Amino acid sequence: MPAGVSPDGPHPPLREPAPLAVPSPAAFELESEADHLAQAHRYAEADELYRLAIAVAPANASLWWKRANNLFASGDNLRAAACFQESMRHTSAAIDPGLITAAWRGMATAYWRSYQPEKSVAAVEKVLALQPENPWNWLFAAFIYEYAGLLTCASLAYQKALEIDPYLDLARVGLQKIRDKG
Image 1 (cartoon, rainbow, N blue to C red):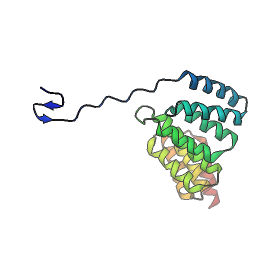
Image 2: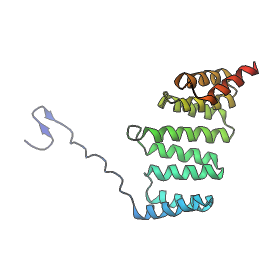
Image 3: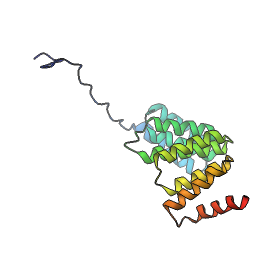
Image 4: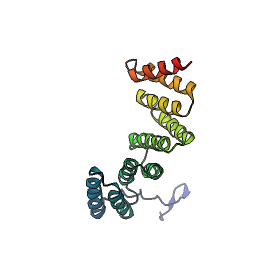
């Protein structure tokens, strides 16, 4: 039978699966040096090397993640948020749901530090949708809601954290603080 034809008639050719990204030695060397610079709090120099490594291996989610954290540490919160988004673009939630959740948490924090409560709330709600069983995510959400002035939401998030983990004292303290406000 000719290629592209089955007993049921013509069919499109099967596509080959996308090849896995092969680590580039050049990107690895740049990443390694950037890691050392970031650990030494030399953030601007580290960022330049992360940027160069990303130019060599743009689909490497880990490079985007490390650059986001480096920018975050340097106080460049909005560029950090953009890099967290890029790390998610290059990561499958099925393969690494923890990285996706952590990236949303990073974005929520970056927006919080940039005085953008609406974006921070939107990001934290993605965190809760991805991992609703994690009491620390609910505690984090409560902090973000409280910052945004959404005290009812904060109270409910503290309660949810305590429902999942009754020994989470930070949630108990936060909830009491909201109740004391009236």
